Length: 434
Ligand code: SF4
View 1 (cartoon, helix red, strand yellow):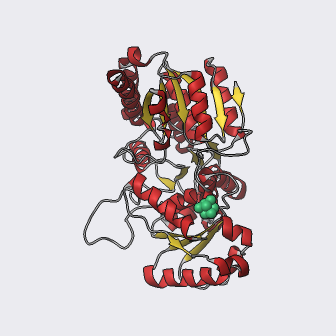
View 2 (cartoon, rainbow, N blue to C red):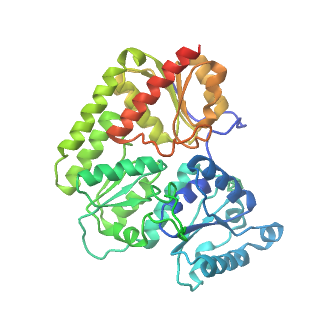
View 3 (tube, rainbow, N blue to C red):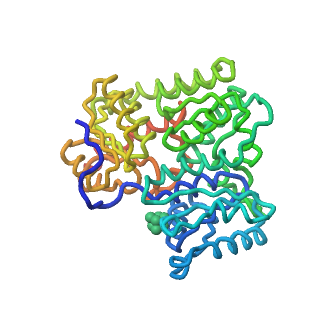
């Protein structure tokens, strides 16, 4: 059965975050960059709290701090003063101005305002009104804004572009490690592996080392090709580069599990013209061995998956590979593309899957109760598993009721092994507890 967007006119416990938070995460993966939120206090305060809890890192987010007067007369004054203050105090290489519900509704012309500012810093406007889409849309818009404002054709390189979407620092490290084994150079958009999981060293640098450099973003126009690991969060940038700079593009799927990781490596291999090395084939074999080891513990268990669209569909394929049944595949972001992706998995695998898009946690809870699943895979907000007395495996963003999830990988063959352990242990611990 396919259920499209919920028909209720009220949302009960939202299943998504707002656009600016996705844009902030994208900007925090750029070296020496500061997101400047053009809005009111709460638009920066709640995302900061979310980042602190999930990544266990201090993050720096600036705010134009719009009040009642700006709501009537416009926020240009605050924005201009904010950009000048940030530049003189922090000396960033990039300030990304991220709009909010308020600044979009006022109608501030942030592109025009920023064009008139003459300072030694790159200024990139990002339009992220929260009455459209979700944090996933915000991430996508932000990465597209980066390449559309900064990418520049200067001559071909032997690099590829990879947009990573809203994955964790541990995932980006795993991706970089696979690329290193393949001796592939890549512009990673954007690279939070060091900026949101920074080593603690004294004296503390004014910006974390690491992150995608402005030069790398500029260079994306000259690459052999682009791959979006999450087409909903990064697909816009990859499509822009294909249309504007003729960089060949590949959209998804997120490399979770055997088939999707094989597809990624095959795509990389074709773009750079080098075979997949033996070391990665060994890792693949280790994943398959781990999957077989847990067969009798997980086979035929019914699973509900709740995550961002590309992670949810990638996870659905992986639990099928494990011999489990993806009974419910849900995302808080409304997306017809997501429905098509999961329908394709259902028709290829023969599973009866209930697909929920744009759903809230109340809708998810009702579906879980009706389907009677054994395991829920979701972020911290999926604590409904306790109410239903089913096993619970934490994935996605945010996870703040356990530690260390930002360091774990779910992608690639090593990520698959982590997931096998996570899924099997969640089922075993639940069985022991009950
Ligand atoms: S006002 Fe809009 S942009 Fe700001 S926190 Fe609320 S939903 Fe997000």
